[in-house]
Amino acid sequence: MYTVYVIQNSDGILYKGYTSNLQKRILEHNSVRGKWTSARAPWNVVYKEEFASKSDALKREKFLKSGKGREFLKRVSKKILIG
Image: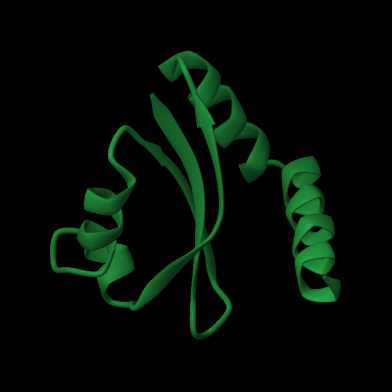
């Protein structure tokens, strides 16, 4: 099982990725192991999806990093905030 995730820090910066172990990966982002992300920590998960295959997870991660993917995340975040 693979998880595609979006994390956000207190400055509102979004980071998108995929992993087979989300808890471990978030710890890495918030520690020294994630060089770029650790300098901007702490990070919190704001969105996630699970996939059975690595290839499907990679396709979804690529989509979320695209212009249409960013638009999708904006729509989703508005729905979450509105409730």
